[in-house]
Picture 1 (cartoon, rainbow, N blue to C red):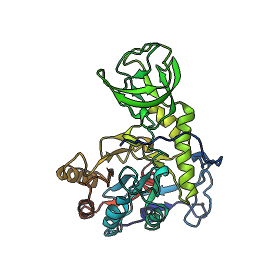
Picture 2 (tube, rainbow, N blue to C red):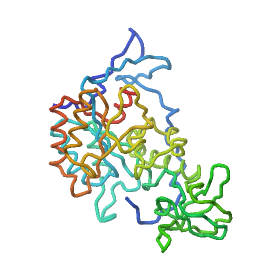
Picture 3 (cartoon, rainbow, N blue to C red):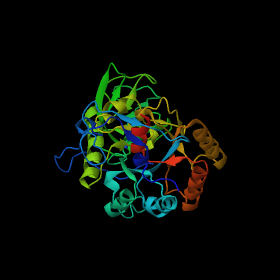
Picture 4 (cartoon, rainbow, N blue to C red):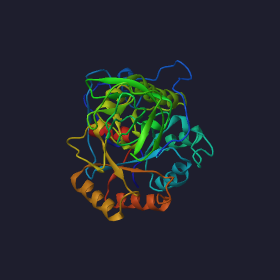
Length: 353
């Protein structure tokens, strides 16, 4: 059987006496519900298996699995994570990581589906699963280049993606890096030019296409990241990792993410295989194992993981019809046949980073 708690199997303490992380269609505001602060990564101290704090400088020797490892990361937190993915993983005593949108926890008939509540998440954690943040509202943390010139009187901008128009109103920045205008996004749409983000006021400055981007300002970024972590930790979960909505993560994202999280599940989306000798937790490679692919490519990558002792990170949205209990169970069977370990993202970071 695939081990469900890999960290127990791989961490070896050195030295006697050494202390051993789709579109949204409703509107939400930006205000916190209370003033409590989430724990930041700099606030954390590692503990050993007995809960004793590890002093700075204490050394742990980590032995990666010989045949490599796979992390399964499921997006958003729909009830199908519990009804489809969870039973499949239980069949192989295999953990996974779930990226949870904190505002969606326990919602019913939202975007035409049900969402896991705290009790469901607790059962996952009790089985060895990890809860990762997926922001509070499925808010993009990336930047998008403008594809049309902007005039001072314009109240629409045309970026490569209109995700800053999903959750509105929110403050946004139009910036070249050297020159920045702050305004607000109030919606999105399309016209004969293309898809656009609607602004609350005229831009007030000119920007050339392909020389400027739209992004959230620091206050909005920190709010989205801190609020999710705070809320999930308020439910009683230990949240250390992050899953970027829409698979969009860049240098602007990382400026804020590494204040709160030790790694990102999809920092470099599009490839399932991470080099075990050059793994960067904020540039984790992830790709889907059911959506947008075929079984032959998944098996090809599993062969490469086993041969190289590499780390694979496999993603899925279980609310999609193609992501079924049987398909997940079949993938886990392929993993077991190759003697590949299954672990959470947090454990993978402990082992490979």
